[in-house]
Each structure stands twice: as C-alpha cells, then as structure tokens.
Amino acid sequence: MQTQALQEIAAAPDGEALQAVKTRYVGKSGLVTKELGTLGKLPPEERKARGAEINAVRAALETALNEREAVLKQAALDAKLASEAIDVTLPGLPLPAGGLHPINRVYDDLTAIYERMGYAVIEGPEVEDEHHNFEALNVPWYHPARDLQDTFWLDDGRLLRTHTSPMQIRYMVAHEPALKVVVRGKVYRYEATDATHEAMFHQLEGLVVGDGISMTDLKGTIAEMARGLYGPTAKVRFQPSYYPFVEPGADFAVWWDNPRGESKWLELGGCGMIHPNVFKAVDDLREAEGRERVYEGKTGFAFGLGPERIAMLKYGIPDIRYFYANDPKVIGQFRGELG
Ligand code: DAH
Image 1 (tube, rainbow, N blue to C red):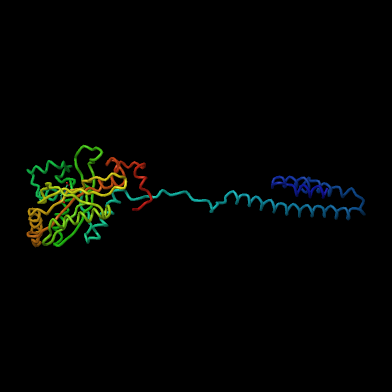
Image 2: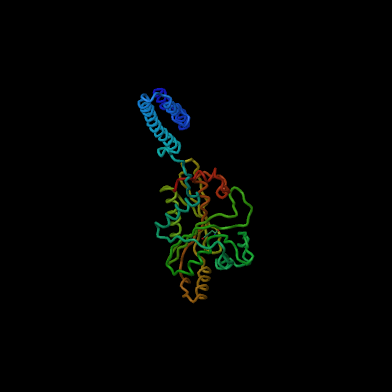
C-alpha cells in the first residue's frame, strides 16, 4: 500500500489530485486510518509491532504528501509569474514624430540668411488698426490702392492685417535708426481661394533704415538672399512697380539652376525705397507718444515676399491650399525632419 500510495503522490498533477490521494489514504476513513482501526482485533502480542508498522507508513505518506504539496505550490506560482512576465527585450511601439511645417522651414531658411546679415527677427499683431495697416503706409482711405487688398474687418473697426508692412511703422515708432529687421507672420485677404490664393498666408517683410541707404543696397540684399536660398549661381531681376509706401518701387524675381530642370523666374515679392510720407507718419506717431522725431531725412528700403511661393517650388507642392488643409497625407511627409 505504501508503494502504491507513494507512486500516486508523486504522480498527482495538481493540488486537487493530491488532496484526493491524501483523503484516500490518510483521511478520516482512508485506507491507512482503516488499517489502524483493525488493530483491536489482533492478538495483543501482535498489536504493538503492527501499530508501529502502520504509523510508519502513515508518517512516510504524510512526509511525501507535504513535499509534493510544496513542489506543486511552487510550480503553480512559477506558472503564474511566467504568465505575467513582460519581455523587456521586445522592440517598443513607435511614437509618431512631429516635424516642422514646410512654411516654418522656409521661414527658418530665410531668417537664418537675414540673421547672418545682422537683422533682428520679429513678429507682430495679426489684428491691426486701419492707421498702421493703411494710412501710415501712405495709403489714404480714398487711395485706389485700398482696392488692391480686400480686407477682413472686425466689428470694432479693426482688421486682420492684409500685409506685414504695418510692422514697419510699429518698429520705427519703437526704435531709432539705424535699424535692420525682418518680420515674419500671417496675413489675411478676403478673396476667393484657388491653387495660388488663400485667405490666410504668410509674408516676410524686411526694413532697413539709416543714412545714405540706396537702391544698390536693396538690390545687393535681395541678391544675397537669393544666393542664400539657391546657391552662388542664383540671379535676381527687378521690374518697376507701384506700392504707395515706397518710391521708387519694384517687383523682384529670382532665377536659379533648378535641379528638376524647371529653371524659371520666380516672382517673389515687392520692394522699394521708403516713401518720405512713411517717415513723416512714423515721426507723427512718435511725437504723439512724446518721442523725438528722428526719421525725416533718413533713407531706407523695404521688401515683402511670400514664403508659400518658395515652399511650393522647393517641395513640389502644386496647390497653396494643401499647406493649411491639415491633411496628414501632405503634412505627414514633413515628419521627423527638422530642416
Ligand atoms: N506689402 C506688400 C503686399 O503685401 C508687399 C510689399 C511691397 C512690401 C513692397 C514691401 C514693399 O515692404 O516695399 O503686397
């Protein structure tokens, strides 16, 4: 019986099976217990030896039961731990990386070029007043130039700036010449959208004021920008044009050896020599704030251009509306790269 019981104990696969073996042999009505119950029927001289023998079997079985129970408990614990284990060597889930918007990349290229030339880089308010957006820039209310720019008006009489040029005024009111500054930021026009027109877009505005600043300085500056963007063989072209806040005024275009074989003149923006009326308007504003009049008699130039045009060509984006539609198929192509 002991041999049989020890085999069953060793073979019990889990706690439940072991409990059944225990009950069968050493439980209240188990086989070993029953055997003890038969002692009374034995002749007295045999009882002691028989009793000792049965108790030895019982002790051996209990030892084996306890040992087997400990083994099964440990095995169950190991199995539970194994099922909860995490493989820390598995590769992780990739986190989607962000990236700079193509317009910001072009802005960063442009501002790096101007910072090398010693310009300050600023932004300014998108909600403007009529005076800074038009009047002070030599665009009186009756001037036909107002028709060139369709404006988003706010209920309080202010407007969304139609260009970054009003920051020329704000910067000159706050700073004395000589100065060199570029302004980056959003502008707004109330107009129908198509592949090359958006109601919201961006501009980079430049302003240089000092003594004896000439059109030569302006042309050299634009040429330096073109070479910074497109390399040493880039060329610039100036054509006479009209903007109320400059005289003379010009439009400028850039030519470079396009690696895709699409070399052509890229019309980039407008520029010119600061109109004396602008300097006068700035001095009037300064005087109203108790500051010195320091601009009349100075010379300077300004320019304004659209980074969208540069980005469309640089990245082969055929429609300006793609920039702001937030379609991950477009913007997702600029993930993970920061330049
Ligand atoms: N503000 C003009 C526009 O939005 C662009 C421009 C032209 C800016 C000539 C200038 C400039 O500073 O001198 O169309």
